[in-house]
Image (cartoon, each protein chain N blue to C red):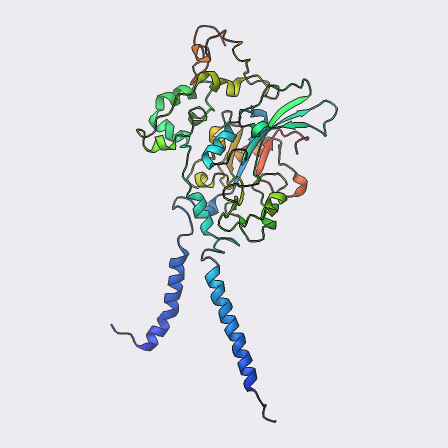
Length: 243
Length: 157
């Protein structure tokens, strides 16, 4: 078969389109995982949290979180009987080594595990000047460590204090919702390690996920709802004093 | 209509603009990564890079595949919500190649108190104890076996 000049000219645009497709690669990370079929969040049941710090240790081991920095941490609240608006909060080493027996008697005491809220309208991604922080199609907020300049705008913008400046990578860093695990069908490291199932990964697009029944039958809150961040970190039996 | 005089400089100007446009397009395609905009206003390849990270915790399904007896014992007791790696540590390497990494047995004296030491902020129904007050000087697992921690030495819990 021989091609004349006209036929080659006609084939060129088709070849260009094909080449673009080759360069674009495979849109999904693995053939078993379709991003469009998931919408990730997490359920945290404060009435089950015992403050053991297993989640904090597991997160650090799974994600190589540097010592002294936290992608997730646990806070202990002490709300006195009269100053309910000004709770005393402590979190020694992020709760990584557990909590010493508190000295304070009376009042209300409980633990609150915290981490990135994976907001739908996240303030951190809105302020990023280079598009290094982004929303995945399956509802996770991630940082592109190649693109991040380390300007720290996002760290200031996060109303939940969930971001930190990584001392070695010199970029912003935060919880990835164990994106490398959930795309392989595993749960997050913190949920895997939680001994009381106080933390549960939730796929809001999966109609069989127990999260739907839970949200229907419990009084569930998000942190700082007045900021309209669209948080997907759902807290059960959250006290009003928690900020 | 009079002939438009000295139009050559306009053509030259258009040429300069055209050159600028071509230069801009070349620079743009050279600096913006191929995958930018594939899923949104960010570099699409970052997703694959982040999800390529190796897993440290194998997940309890992997453990239960090879250790069904322990899984069954645990499922029948009070520790049914406690996943294997919560105590035994991250063992994805052991799950990939059981000979390569052997799990270390945790030290019971520290392990149990991690969760069961007394603390005001713990839920009231959760079993809590002062270190060593319950057992005299015996280790916890003299009476409570970690996989199914009900009392094994006669007494009722």
